Length: 148
Image 1: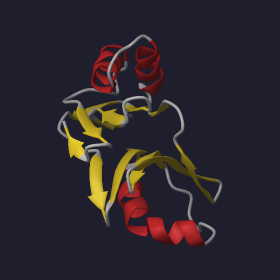
Image 2: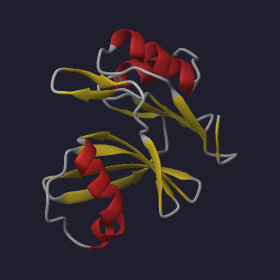
Image 3: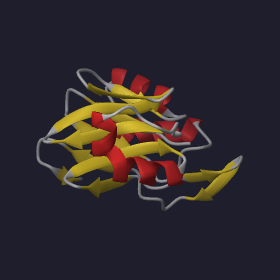
């Protein structure tokens, strides 16, 4: 699966780079932070569904969704973080006004934020506990609009 965590206080988002396939690790070099049309998508779920979601994101905001996709995550648009997902044909997008997480290691990561870890440290810790998270940790600083 994945670990994605949003640190609201420090305006940073971090994620791992492991891709899982069936019940095991497939790659530790998968890029989960992807820019598309000035929006940074950090998604978890089926890789083909994530690509479809990124390409059709603007459409989903305007009409009822005609497919059920296996993906969810956090997007950064105009310097603001949003939690996004599709459930039972309904597109949902909420502003992140507190620490947020998604993916199989997300609970470990957000708990680490509670104990003073940075977003990067939180994902690094989640990787030690969640077999579906791993690889390099990528961090994006929303305020500086840079990867760190």
